Amino acid sequence: MPEASVAIITRTKDRPLLLRRAVESVLGQTHAGWLHVIVNDGGDPAAVEQVVAPQVERYAGRLIRIDNPHSLGMEAASNKGIAASDSRYLVIHDDDDSWEPAFLEKMTALLEASKPPVAGAICHSVLVREAIEGETVTEKAREDFNTDLLAVSLAQMAVRNLFPPISFLFQRAALDAAGAFREDLPVLGDWDFNLRFLRHHEIAVLPEKLAFWHHRVAAGEADYANSSMEDGAARHARYDTLIRNELLRGDMDAGRVDIGFLANYAAAARDIVPGHLLEERLPPPVRATLDGLRGQLHHAEAEIAQLRAAHADQQDVIAGLNRQVEAMYRSTSWQVTAPLRWAVRLTKRLTGRS
Image (cartoon, one colour):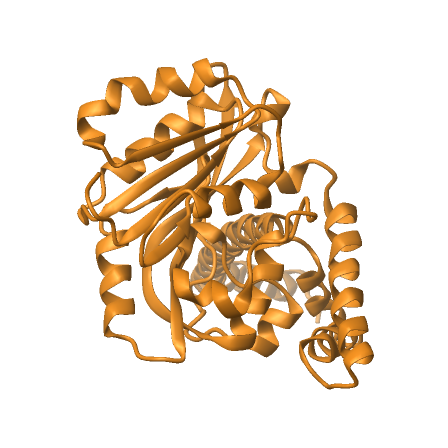
């Protein structure tokens, strides 16, 4: 097997329609020094085989496939894929996400040029809204997700997650300090990992939209739903609190002020900020949905403003015409009224009336 600088970990379970796109995303990279680890987490092995078998030549020995007999969960699947590979860099490429072809080339170049304490890098992301319609993935809309992010702050990460896994490339050696993914977390495992990562390392930012975070607005079968769609905001809120409580208890038990106090201070400050900022408590897909609705509202408001402007223009035209008619009446009325007045005066004289 060729030496790889990047191990790409893909977690999947019974989603061949999406996995096929993820495989193409990996095989289409301009950077060739990668190893693709597909962890089939309790899904049908035959479904994965149908996707990867036609790509054997293109993989050229750069594929490792793991079939878990039973599902271990997303974070356990990540850890298993990491343990089965050997590389300098790691990235989680879930089966429903995708990259621009230059993602690995540009991101590895950024990390190669960076110095400690930088041990990871993200790029800007695009949120892609799509629907599963039969055997077809139909794109509904896309919008920028975090293109205003120019630096990754530990304090901001303590408030909420700032980027999706598909955009994050990091050094394998960073796991020594940050630790592995927490296998007991069904959601928010990436946020928990990112917090611990930033506790020890810096993350560089490449301000280019190279990663696509796909979100199903209509998933069809349950297997194709995003993890954030399963229980909604309530589940995320529950585990958000659990993680913060555990971190705080760790600080209290150790008699220190550390990331637990930071995470809980951030949550407390978040709760007293103005109402329009409380959206940061929502999961990223929900916030993105709200942003999309605002965009539609702003578009509708702009159309209404245009209609009002056109109506005002029409009113101005009508008013102008009225003024012209009135001016014409004033300029011509004497031609009609003068003879009448002369006739009245003549009549009065003839009849002897004053």
